[in-house]
Image 1 (cartoon, rainbow, N blue to C red):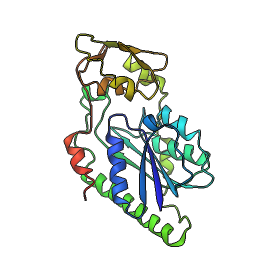
Image 2: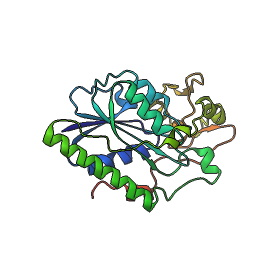
Image 3: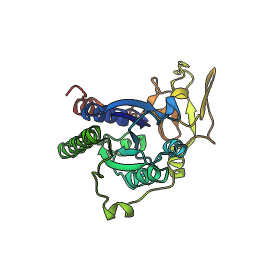
Length: 265
């Protein structure tokens, strides 16, 4: 059985968790597909497709909506997954709905609590550095185990099995905020040219093509969606806003979450 995991990861938590899933679901051979780098995926040669993102203001990131919207699932099995820092909101419900509307048969879903990566919340003390907590790892591994069994059944029968999740009614009443709020809270971006090395990483990691390197990085605020990737990932911390400069960065998964999500298990 061949599977494709299409992921959007801002600072690495989601990618790390997806690698953990791929390592645990051994009844399927997985290919990882970075939506920002690799664009629209070709799903024809895969038996199951995974869609994974992070909770973007309690909802699905715009870039994920864009690429799922270009696909035709034709009844192909899929699973949806997301990471979140403090609250998940309606992210998982929305992600499942997006996939279903594009013709995918969603057979599994899960949301994993991970360290917070939004500078505003980090500076407010809501870091969640120890996430995922022990009980959350138990649930995550249980999800992976069930998905592994599902793939094993598919290998034996050649047919998709039953869904391995139950949607809670309460999930439909959870909050999701307009994406414009995050951009508002981030505000206009500035560059410290004295520390900027012109490495171009900010341009590469921006999923919305809102940064262009013209000797120094140039920000197109019209395209920006306030995802904080450029702020977080800048090696020199040269990118800043009016309220935040040199503080609250989450450049990559911390050592604690890396240890919990090791793939050599």
